[in-house]
Image 1: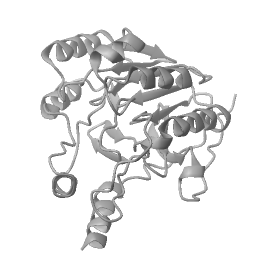
Image 2 (image 1 turned 30 degrees about the vertical axis):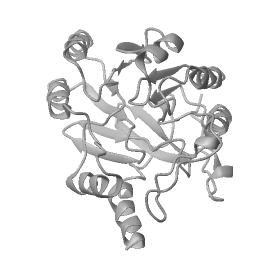
Image 3 (image 1 turned 120 degrees about the vertical axis):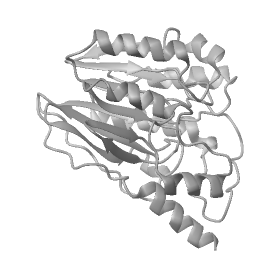
Image 4 (image 1 turned 135 degrees about the vertical axis):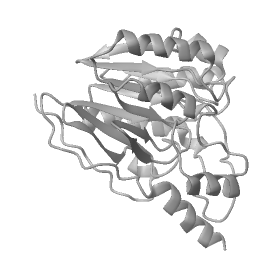
Length: 289
């Protein structure tokens, strides 16, 4: 029965893990790395599996070591234009020292990086280390990026109003929206999460309201999230809703995303193979100058 549960979880959460095929990189392609759920912690023991062969166990003991390896891999192998981190930077929200350790490692990236607050991140602690990084936006090579605060498990009215105003002001520019909890799920994944992990909410509490707002802005091409600890892509209309796996969970994947006029494509890359059960990490071809 435990084995069957493991297989079922894999089918539900991994069926779309590979993402779309990646076209050849070009000067017009904007590459970003999407990583999520670092869960940095300084502990001596990892949490126990919830059932035999539980695929979601966090390697908290090596969490900062894994982030170190990810930063090195991103700098030397992936070489993106930017990195986005969709929340749960620490495992315990009041762990200020671990959050400072996360920032010190992210500061080693050779490209700009942009964090989003997650469920595990305590707002007061997060703002001490990443001031001004709740609801904010930036532009990069013709693309507009929007980072949202969903720390409460929902987008609060003030965030929704800010998002609406920001998207209206950026009309005509292709946009990427980033937040911790995803806006899209499916019946099977929801059922398995409830049965296997009891009480886990996969999506934003007011996901339908947020999706409706985004769908009224056709410039939104991509929505990036974390939280579920698994990789999934779904498309509604012209928008791709994509989650990245948890960095703290083997095989320590990030999602490499390429944005172009032709569309959005992505693939998963293991960035810390030493902890990934001997899996060979894939090196992505660097963009052409």
